[in-house]
Amino acid sequence: MKRPRSAAIYARISKDITGEQLGVQRQLQDCRELAREMDWTIGAEYTDNDRSAFNGKIRPQYRLLLEDLRSGLRDGLIIWHADRLHRSPVELEEFIDLCEDRAFAVATVRSGALDLTTASGRTIARIHGAIARGESERMGERMRRSNRQAAEQGRPATRGPRSYGYTRDGMTIVEAEAAVVRVLAERFLAGESIAALTRWLNDSEIPTATGGTVWWSASVRQLLRSARVSGQREYHGEIVAPGTWPTIITPEQTTRIRRTLDAPERKTLRTPSRYLLTGLLRCGRCDRPLISHPKHGVPGYDCRRDVGKGACGKLSIVAEPLDEYVRDLVLTALDGPELAAAMLRRSQPGTDADALAGKILADEDKLTGLAEDYAAGEITREQFKTATAILQKQITANRERLATLDGHGELARYLGQGEQLRDRWHASLSLDQRRAVIRSIVEAVTIHPATVGTSRFDPDRAEIRWRV
Ligand SMILES: [Zn+2]
Image 1 (spheres, rainbow, N blue to C red):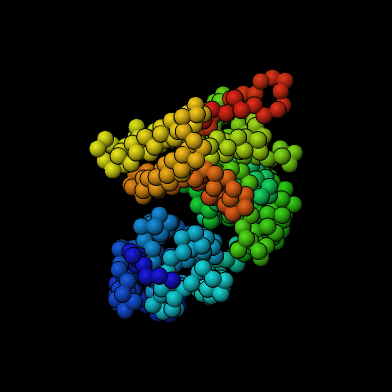
Image 2: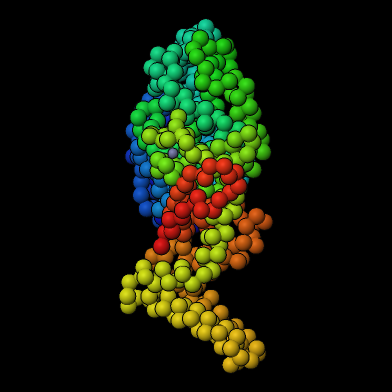
């Protein structure tokens, strides 16, 4: 793994679970020392004071650290020991997801380098986590015994935060939240990824159990895994008794969700979301986001009244023809002259980007002129072919140059690439890459109501708002 450009140090005070009293200052010193040895540049230090480890309290600096690693602001991490980083298997799995996405180096003072991008590295991290957790659990043994008793009697656990979907006493369903749980379960079982579902919750601004606005993939996974929502009492992850409270989804659904989550191939071969346009579609009646949703096994997008604020619930569209239609428009637009023209309008006069876009436009004009001349018989086929090849080479080179200039980001990356992208679309682009191509120039798509009496796909229903 290559040397980080701007690494992070993370330190945390926790309950003294390994018998080594170690303050944050000591941890930081040791980590800085290690950074010097490895010749890493430290961009920032993050510290949480968290004396009651394993109580599930939010650690603001840890969250900030994850954000910064995710955004690429930090591209390396030093911690004192692997057990300082994660307090639960759920947190560890979230961190592993992040490592797989962003491939950054992790070094520890006491437990060596941690390579979470390999299977064996992940296994080691999980073992560290399990040991730390085992120690902590022994400490809480006494308190847990009474919990266990409550569990076996099928009473809901009432310690800790309120469970999503239920009132504080755990005995009454909160309808709005229950609807969200049902949609999550359905869509997950239909093959959507935890990441896609998390994005959907955040995009739709659905509040969390504590009224917060940010969902984490780890909490979504936990919610899906939970046996409580299917009316079963679990203890340490195992279902021990039927519950005494109302159910939101069926026990069979929970069984299937758990089987999918626990499948060994899941860690390496995650089922991708099948929906290309999730998060981009809005209802033409009420302007709320449409939700991807299979209907009788056919993927589609729906306006759902039971989820999301103020949704009308009266609109739906079949996914496949819409996905294809939008994809074709995007790929065609990427190769057309209008996009370059739009970029010209957007760029500041007198800049390099302005000059380049101007050249591209002029060359495209010449191409049109050549075709007309050839059609009119004023130049030979040979002349036409030679001149066209020269112009096209210039256009491609200038587009590439334009792409490297700041301020054109994603859009410029794909400009002029439509035809190549079309060839690779299903063969070698991942769903995330396909979505990135679409999102590079599409801001949103409003779906208008269907004309009564037609079941065929009607392209006029889709109104695209372009980014440029
Ligand atoms: Zn609607």
